[in-house]
Image (cartoon, rainbow, N blue to C red; front, side, top):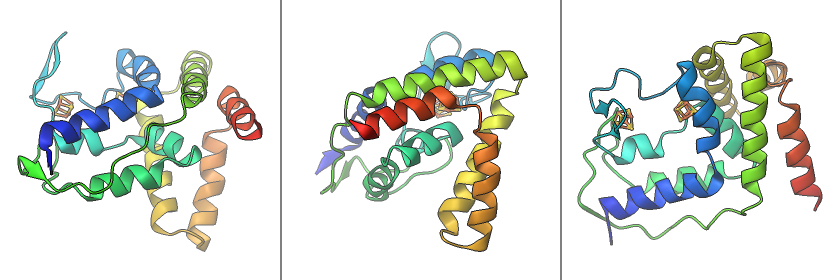
Length: 181
Ligand code: SF4
Ligand code: SF4
């Protein structure tokens, strides 16, 4: 048995270990925040209602990074054990049976995520992309790829996704280094 708070802490700790805040630090000041217009967001203070749903949810950037680094399946399996997730709120019971916890990610993953954040910042500056639109498009590609794996649709979407992510060269280089060591 685990409390809802322990589950949220575990998820946030994992995201922290992956170093995902480096991407949020590019996204948030440039209008891409996923907390935008949420009534639980207090200016300069942050979220006033941490819940299982928002902790479990991954934006397009996160889905892509997790998928590329082989973390997505374990993340989804962990959160599938947690009932009551809703939009920006949860109805998760105070105690939940959680047989499966996430292993700590390899600390080297942080440098790959940092590289992603640098690529994103450069793309924003040089190609003037709208961060939230870019993120949403990536998310729709990811959802299609995950829903229809090995299909004609997935192959078509994968091509578009590769094109969308063409400029993420530092990310790809760090990823290749990581897998070659
Ligand atoms: S949309 Fe993604 S990158 Fe942007 S603030 Fe939310 S979690 Fe971070
Ligand atoms: S409830 Fe979710 S969307 Fe709202 S501020 Fe908190 S984390 Fe952000």
